[in-house]
Image (tube, rainbow, N blue to C red):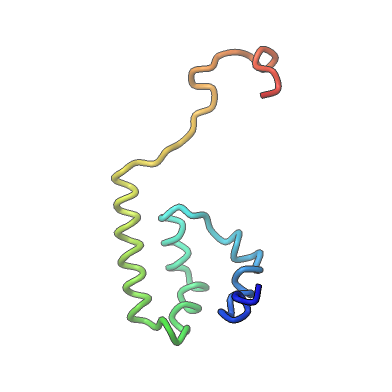
Length: 91
């Protein structure tokens, strides 16, 4: 807790809005990064600015492209298991 206070990170850590703002999918992160809300917040940070923001956008774009080439896992429920709900039980 003391480390978080020193790092001025408590607002970030405790923010429920930020926690639910986007997922950890690279495309979602890029979308959030490009959104007006986060863009202005990031660029206005004196440690970041426009130049570093542009670098972040470039890097996340490369990550999104790499993730898209690698494919995305999507679970398909009951693709192989054809038992009905009563046969499967509670698990």
